[in-house]
Image (cartoon, rainbow, N blue to C red; front, side, top):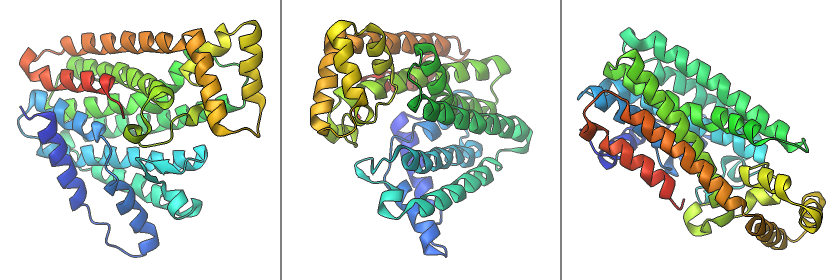
Length: 324
């Protein structure tokens, strides 16, 4: 069994071997740039780690794993345009460094190349993997649309928010794990258990992101703290704050949400203070722990030796305790 570090080194090496030295440079340089920014490489790592649970031969899963990482990065290019985000992983986003049109077109190429890589799945598993990936890609678009819709809605329920992040974030983690498991020769039930592990760890992962955006360390997080607060993003924290705020707290919270011309630092500090008074941080942490425990239970049911699952279990723990 390979360790997570060995897997990520393999993934990084394979990503570096992808050839973007093509013309026109204006199309391919942004792809090379965004992939050079690194990131956690969780999706390809999950693919190869799931494969490794059932097979010592990771080679058949490498191209699909890279395809999933490329697809994930493609979604970030388009998300950053839609969110008007100028910083990603501590560096300028593609649309900020170049322009919107470049980010759209380079992202489109990344999506197409992602399909080409996933199509290199061994023929025995190709239809299953392609069907799963296509379903996942559509679900991610659905999640993104819900996210956009929520911006213009006054009321969003916690359950609606959880469904949005399931689609936008969790399904790709589930897809990565199930893809690797299938290619490794897992049975149907084990592949599904790993998919569920990915869904639940993905939900916990996004709730952790919500927390870090408010309570994280900016240097470690790689983007500006309080970005969600500044754009009134309907996070799990804000949804519960709106639900719990009464009297003066409600007046103050709604005032900050309705003001357009404000000092960013003042708004971030004021809303964070409201979150603290309303104790929504604990609500978010408790829900994160709920999904984490479900994920661990899913992993425990996978019918391979317990020591083989150790690296996945440790990675899940690290994702929950991370500061970036």
